View 1 (cartoon, rainbow, N blue to C red):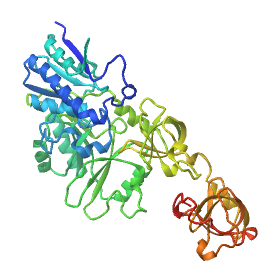
View 2: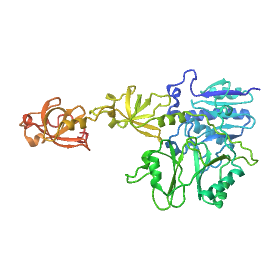
View 3: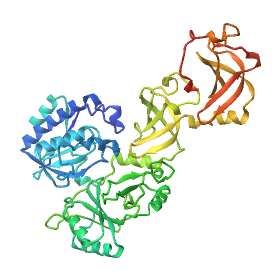
View 4: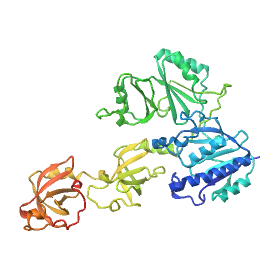
Length: 521
């Protein structure tokens, strides 16, 4: 009999929300826990009707299905409380109680980071998709569970098959890490004096082991996770300067692996060229006695390892399965890798963070919420409100300032789309020059004067009580002559004095509105 498969969603699939169409979640943050609880209750009904009290974990990932952002790691990727801190028991083929399976379901619905398939030996399965959808099914229909899920406010429709069926995975054949593998590894250690062993216990999660002798190999081998994918790389090096230089010129994404002086190997992190800099107080790559480092390709196709294999089961058969199909998170990473500082991108302002900046949906299928435009990068000109420059819904063209792979964020600038007006102004003027400007703001201690588009200076004036009532009053909008007294290009400040025709000038006093501090100059 053909399996019965149901698709469960918290929305009507015929009218998917905009966020879902662009790979984002359609579940509002405030409703996340409620929706996850409803999904777990619905799936419980299917599992009970199928007689499933335990589930098998398949193709587990620590991250990379929904996102590669490091920020999810701070929340445990949804695995905290389900598995020990070392995540033992979370691997391909692991048998977990139904309650743990429901905890994994909750983590996936909330997009906490981790992802896996869940199934039983008799055909019952559970898949969480990329569009806030759940696929559940087995060898027979589950009408009572489907009705209960609908009563919980979820949409349940029969479908032909799950798009996450393992049979649809792209093949990724790796040789078994059998006796021949370990014999070759012993030879490499003897030849090189040491190697770095990568243990990928689940997809996108690594443990690192430095092997320097046969005893070390034997000790590490006994502690490897079942069905782990292994790769052997050249040894860590004490030549930190060469690692930094290589990183600064790297053309592909790499993982930075560091060993501390006590022998502890830090988790690998995506390395960026700036991490190779040495002109900072705290360099990203630590240098010192006993410290070692290595750069490992993020994708082995770019530079294959010395040796690779996957751990077979106890009977010598390789049963490990990995989902190798590219995910939206992989496509998002590809987009990030394609961007360079200085590139011009287009997008739509999506949302704001008060006075911090605005999120931007880049014009790319995976660009939803990827851009961020900070307030200081919005305009050379002074503005009173973000809405005046980057209101929600406005289409913009901006230049890329920085690409952050860890946070999956592209820093943008509107200012960088035009030349720096300060440099142009100082090329045309110098200290001592007299020119005309327009008063833009009046404060108790002086007047701000616009000298050119994007360039303002400050005339420090005595308070009315000190200056008496003599002298003309300058008001916002007045055109007055001024003389340049001093220029601080680094802090973007210009000190002015009244020109000859405005000698004795005074501020209108505290009755005038005070728009902002002097530091805004």
